[in-house]
Amino acid sequence: MRHERIEINPGIMDGKPVIRGTRVPVELVLRELGAGMTTEGIIAEHPRLTADDVRAAQAFAADYLADEDIIYR
Image (tube, rainbow, N blue to C red; front, top):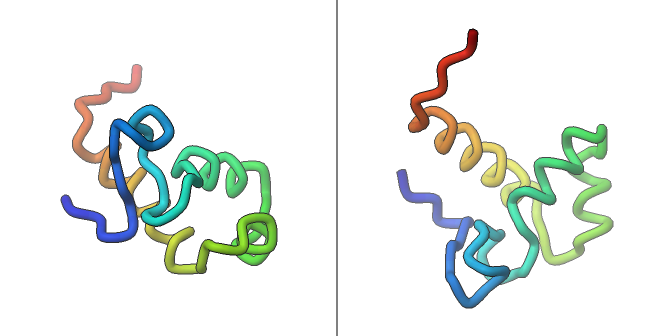
């Protein structure tokens, strides 16, 4: 699935998925959400991000996991 707000480029952050136009990794956004930060808190810490960027990071992760063959036992 194509995500307009997410970029994967080997020349940026060693090819990790980042929010397009920034060097903010999707992983960082997800970790901050997981640690209890609000979207507003993340935006305050990374002013170039928008609420749509935070939602795009979540959607990207969900789509990535949906495409994996993960079996929980």
